[in-house]
Amino acid sequence: MLPVTVPPPKCLQKPLAVPHRHMFGPGPSNVPSRILEAGAKPVIGHMHPEIFEIMSDIKSGIQYMFQTENRMTLAVSGTGHTAMECAIFNTVEPGDGVLTAVNGIWGERAAEMAERIGARVSTIVAPPGGFFTNDDIEKALLKHRPALFFLAHGESSTGVLHPLDGIGQLCHKYNCLFLVDSVASIGGAPLHMDQQEIDVLYTGSQKVLNAPPGTAPISFSERACQKIFSRKAKPVSFFLDLSWLANYWGCDDKPARVYHHTGPVTAFYSLRESLAVLAEEGLENSWSRHQAVAEYFHAGLQSMGLKLFVKDNQARLPTVTTIVAPHGYDWKEITSYIMKTHNLEISGGLGPSVGLVLRVGLMGCNSSKSNVDMVLAALKDALKHCHRSKV
Image (tube, rainbow, N blue to C red):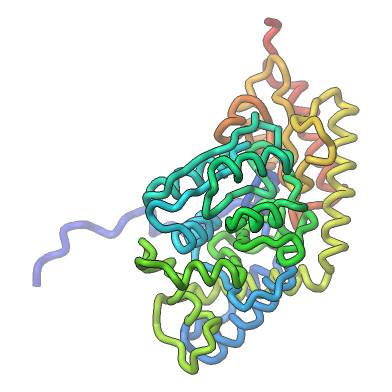
């Protein structure tokens, strides 16, 4: 036997220490004790019948959250990026046309993912804080004739809630699948997958659902499945191949499930509990609460003389608010001061909004007027104590 030459790390001789923070950035959000406790239940096998029952409960919860009856509904083992790749890698083949709506970072990411697997990618671009009319989208569909159109419902980098009505119908008019990212919006703003004719919809566990990051609900329409299961070549990723995932999640009506990967069973416990919390409150109540809290927050910001980045109040994402970076201040100093002084996370911009905004996320259990008051007090304190340039 060879000798051990790398000693045990001294850092691991100390107990794990994790601070409690108010997670009021764009995500992840705070996890309530009920969901944390669910995730601490005993580990059992990822192919045990009890896990399959939990996975069935999760599937039903996702169908409710998405407002869909799609049989092909499951949760990918990974974050929202994993679901984004699962959607694109399964629906798109090399040479397919993909049109992405870029009004923030998520359209940019979707375009890059599609390019990496050989798609012919076209974009329509709106400035940060902007969005597209249905006429804009139809003109692009007519010009590019894509097989897939990507749109972020909740663009968390810019704070835009994009209108969805009529877009699915336009896509189908031009024989195109409609893919929607709802990571920042699901549960916090109205969305109806079936009624709005969305073909692929995905989200993450760590925002309105208040579960730890690591699972990503996704659903595929029958139209999307027809394209996926008539591919000429297998998807580029084995891990995200829908034919395997469908079997693991019991979506393919086969009598037996075959091992594909070791599912994150404790993350499934947390996801199931978070979906139960949403179901108990009810979607309509959750939508209304997030909207009312957002409006209360917006009024408070404006009373302080701060400006909202998204001009159209109908297009403001109720879960993640973007504030115009206060003139004369370093946004990094503001966020750092608030973290150190108030133990509270807010963030700056992301992608095209870097340097332009501060972002505040109030999602799920964090969406309350008392938390708004806490954020407003922290911002007021930061603006009083942080350096302001006179230039």
